[in-house]
Image (cartoon, rainbow, N blue to C red):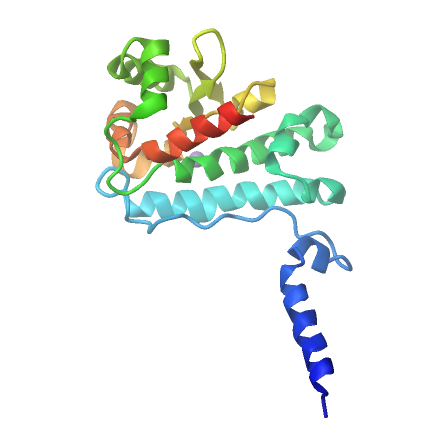
Length: 237
Ligand code: MN
């Protein structure tokens, strides 16, 4: 029979086990590596602007493939599997050449999509307020001026890639774009506070080749609260 003291020990033991990170619990086997974060809303939350089927395929297949392929590329580099995705893409030069491109493409894909889901929401859109609006007006003259410049950067990205709003620089905020799954972090710049995916997989089912129509619709789902939080966090660093 368990004494009260033994029972407490058992209870404390199981509570402690729950607090140990998965990576440490799996110390005997290979590190579990990066995981696909759940979509923070239903697949159809962004309808009619972004359709449910696109969201399902984009998250469950495309993003999942980046995570799986990143873990595969890190198979023989378990020390990287316990680091943050930021650390991975900030240090691409540290990786052996044999896996560097795979880490760049799939690590970038994981970083970019992880943020992308959070900067969209149901009933989003409109304009930011407060400090972020002020910063946008300072950098781009007006919110409309910003929207036009950001859309332009997204339109002019030839082929697949992303457009970004990045903190820092002379005017406090700047707009840039990247090919493939690259992003400003890989160039040693600050992490973007907003990004838009202009790979065809992000819009082809509903908009086919009409990237301009997708971007016009996308502004209706932007989660400005999250972008403002990203902006505030960037200024605390
Ligand atoms: Mn994508």
